[in-house]
Length: 387
Image 1: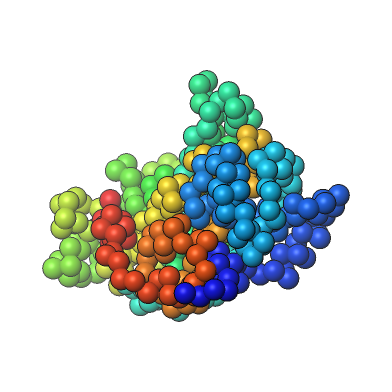
Image 2: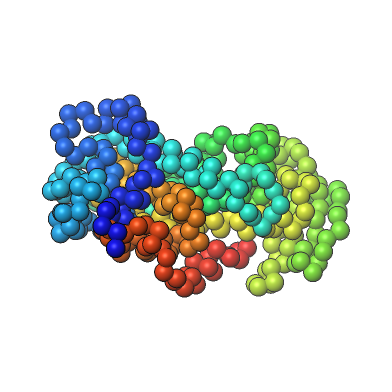
């Protein structure tokens, strides 16, 4: 057995320490702090995420039971729930947002060459939002119905590596499509969105930026065909057409040609109709691109089920933001670890291994040396159907 450092401290080897300290100084995060620094705060919260701790008392008890390991994990001994609660409530959440964005940049570079089901070198992003419901009596600042409170995470995920590239947190009352106004669209990139984002004025904004979109048409979307291309029906394709939008508002909101591809899903026998402004890629790739939209759903699944943002360790807006951004940073740090160690295991398996071996003093690569069966649930989600 490796008698040196804990698995947790080896995970933190991939944390950008120098850049983090610069971020802390920018926001004066350690001003007037005697012992529980921003770094200790991050480590404790990341530990809570990786081991599934569900309350401040749970964190305090678990750390106290393993106090002899804490120094080597970069965590001060004797962390109290009062100290942690105070840090969550008062420490500037932008510190953890900025370090999460820094980690996202590092991870995206590592995953840039990941192969896909389509022969495209362009950046491809899946965009959607998820609502996290909260207790109205505890989170009155986040009310969105008479009896409910909640927040929304509007997220764009780079499908190469399933790494978030854009995250915008709002109250749950904000309409999903409004979040598109916050994105700086990359020329040449593809943006995959569902029918909830079928706002032709905003889709035209994507096109005007030199970017591409792929979405599903609604039943009442009016379209006038100008050209048709032959399709391979053996692949499930039914038509590949270019034309213009019809109706009262749509032609004014989107005054450019649009492509419509129809496809029959062999598993569900449902007929699906896709719209895109990408005119040159194969029609089947339009369908495959939309299928990749499920990557953002998989990201939401991990964040809400495997990392802890369902149970918040604080009730203020600042505390909620702190926990969300540290959860995202932790997720991305694990993604970096997977790539750097060249692991073939899924994110699910890696998180499971870490949750039970975090205090173990073994070489981290040895922790993942045992063969485990692939998660069937995750496999179904990754393969996903178009609906």
